[in-house]
Amino acid sequence: MSSKIIIGQYVPSNSVIHRLDPRVKLVTVFLFVIFVFFANNTLSYGWLSVFAITSALLTKINLKYIIRGLTPIWFLVIFTFLLHLFVTHEGQILFQIFGLPIYSGALIQGGAISLRFFLLILMTSLMTLTTTPIEITDAIELLLHPLKKIKFPVHELALMMSISLRFIPTLMQETEKISKAQASRGVDFKTGPLKERIQAVVPLLIPLFVGAFKRAEELAMAMEARGYQGGEGRTKLRELSIRRLDWSAMLVFLVVIIGLFLFRQ
Amino acid sequence: MDIVFQQVSYIYQPNSPFEHQALKNLSFSIASGSFVAIVGHTGSGKSTLIQHLNGLLRPTVGELRIGEYQLKANEKLANIKALRRQVGVVFQYPEHQLFEETVEKDIAFGPKNFGIASADIERRIPQVMKAVNLPLDLLKRSPFELSGGQMRRVAIAGVLALEPTLLVLDEPTAGLDPKGQLEIMDMFAALHKQKGLTTVLVTHNMEDALKYADHVIILENGTKYLEGKPEDIFIEKEKLESVQLDLPEEIQFLQTFQQRFGLSIPYRGQSITELAHEIKQRLEGMNQNE
Image (cartoon, rainbow over all chains, first blue to last red; front, top):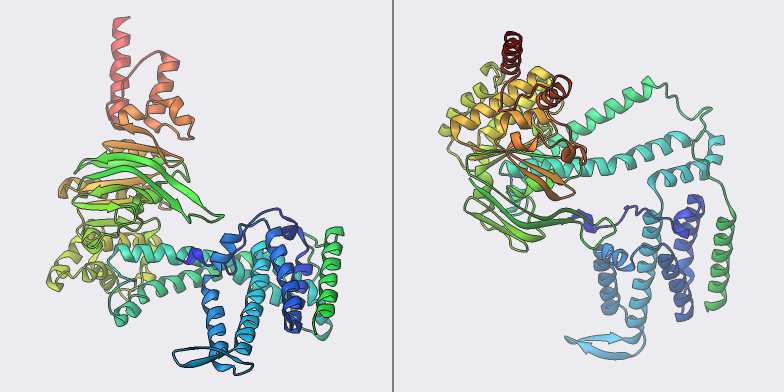
């Protein structure tokens, strides 16, 4: 069940998008999220959609897989669309559903908002699909580096992030394993009254927490044993560097932004 | 309970970049009351196979029968709880499933879920504690205060308390010391005999497979590679080595012995002491002939 959701999932490959510097991807997605709100007509929305879909195709990940993975988000997109459809009262009345008038403005606005929402989700998932959690943390650490001057604990924050990201799949596996073991002992997670199903979670949660604490302790011990002492004087195995590919990607994105401002009204 | 697999295939995460076929067209049958060892390299599909035995997984293609229960692709089993009540599964590192406040409550957890009367459960608890060789005064302790080996035994007791007719063991001795391994395996062998269970053992340990099983199935890449009696399977040195499996120590010794000294001793399930005795007799016999 959980395997169908792709948010936060990394799909290994060697596409152009995969090879981009994670800092470039992070900043691009961040700026894209802001600039989506500047689109205000068919042409500018179309322009951004072309950019997003081209990026999706460039990842070489099966488009069907991406779209299906966003299923839980589709629900939100459709909900937003319907909300706008019935609440907005602009333009002419086109037709009526169950006695509720549908305005032309509502149709346009509903469509625009859901498209905006879809583009946001698509671009952010493209980033996590093509970037390993470690790369993301490295990028964040480097991007936040200037904040060190004001004594902001950048390295510690990045370390906390990478540890939690690292253990998400481990905990997921552990959850699956324990739920299978308890199901074999007669726990029913899927049917029965709600109260019983909530109680069924206890035999799952307790071993999970016990295991997580044990793991945290072991990790702390292992780090101490190897003399870990934070970011001071620490070097990296994988140095991030901006290469020609990254410069071209930034150039393309700049063109997209300029295009957006030319096309919007 | 007898088990019949008919061309079972299982695919993890179909239609995704992570699609992986763990079982391919697997067919075999296990007679009721037998002790079967399932052996194979990491990733050969052993764990996937045993999860079919109590309906945790359903085949993607094909069907299987466990006793009177049929599991088919695309068809939910209505009385899955009745099946699970009869199939006790000891997973790898079963101590991770402990959660109750006391050992006693944890052992009672399974039977209670299957609606077994509390008087009956109270009768079973001391029995299973004795079976796993734990003193009764541990019953009121928290399972998390115990040593690793004791926790393992409590978890196994929790499965045995279901009084299953089919016992499935997934590397039950992994991570135990040699003495603990021997104790636990002997305990399972004794239970198997006493209660007339059908036992399915997944193991990396060829010596265990040879010693306890009366039937061996070797998996490779999700398909059945070899199947038969352990004495017949474990002399196929080349075939085993091509799937990165070793011969059991006893047979390895006998084969090397024959190469070095030209003395052939067929393996018929002798223990190490019996083998030593037999070799001694044969050597003495040779001396007298000279």
